Image (cartoon, rainbow, N blue to C red):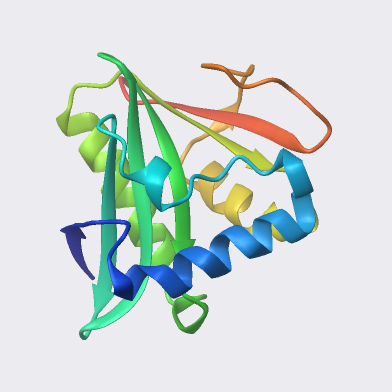
Length: 152
């Protein structure tokens, strides 16, 4: 898997990002917290695309919340890359970057619908545990919060 720091407004990202947002909104409605291309372009967010043999396999992002805390944002494997390890590779890349930056913790917000079970299983498999809402998030029946201690 080849990772490239990239532009979330790039044309080759548009279809997968649209699919990501539409799928989340279809399940979570107004409770979906995923960022669009504009949000993923913020100065506090680093966005990567993942490539396998010159085919877009997915994307992920890391938002700096403060000097020691980052947030995993908008992870998505392309439909053609599901069940190939692409999601795990993207997550491992983000975790490695968090460690490289010296973060003590990574957190994320995700949904509670059946659609989110594979992602939550992946997050838990690398050590993420349930945590309280962080940053500006509010708890609801539609979301859950996970955190990974990077100092262990």
